[in-house]
Image (cartoon, rainbow, N blue to C red; front, top):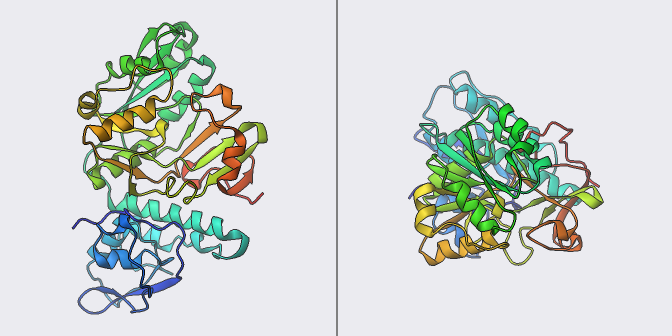
Length: 381
């Protein structure tokens, strides 16, 4: 049974326990959580030892006197189990040692008002470990598909695409009632291949996306929204999730929102509307601006519906009806922008987002994984 982050627990109810070399392998000190409740459905596909570790805040490594195999440590990292160590001997690979000894995620105790911040830092650390353990052998090719009718947003969107690492990227633009001349400067400044197609404003949004996707040459297609924010590892994380899960379609959970009229950032609760916002789960829903699918599967599913709205939801519905599997990975590298509801194809009032928020911060305060140019420290509002 393969080990993946599927079933990662965002809010653990147990503390750290120790991981020691017992002479033949790595083992915990025996103080595992005691519970009579069955594991969540998303963890039942995991090996029993991994499922048993999910309620823990993490594992602290005690090193033996000399070099030992690290396969089990990397296995835990691949599962997203938070790992830490006070130091690391010279025989530990540098990249792993750097992550294990970065104990900044432990600076906030998971109690009182900082519970949400402690959980966020813990999850960021988990994602960094996953990236190390699931590092791909090659570089995936990804075609970023973006439809836009707002030329003023194109330079910022293309700049974020240019920041992507861990993938060979090309951009395909569907210019929705927008002349190419209005975005020429931004396109010519982009150090990536770009293809585009101009379509009249009356063409349905889904058709614009399909026309753009028809120009793609990458192995994967990634939908990109022109008004949202994406971290530099967004595409690589999606490909990683598609690979380790074996899913046909993947995307992130829609967790972080910047509410422009309020100048506030919120993070949605994993338990609002049931488990709709949990990550590292099999689901029929992902954030529409983060859909990733292979070009072949996109064609087999039938592309986006020729509709002006709800094209993401309709695509995911068509995918599941066609027997495609959908996996939702973490949402720490993505922030959705929300202004007044009339400005978006997905219309919900700002009050809705405040109602389902677990955390709220003044200003633009994304996860540290976004590596945003502004001060990205999360400060409680």
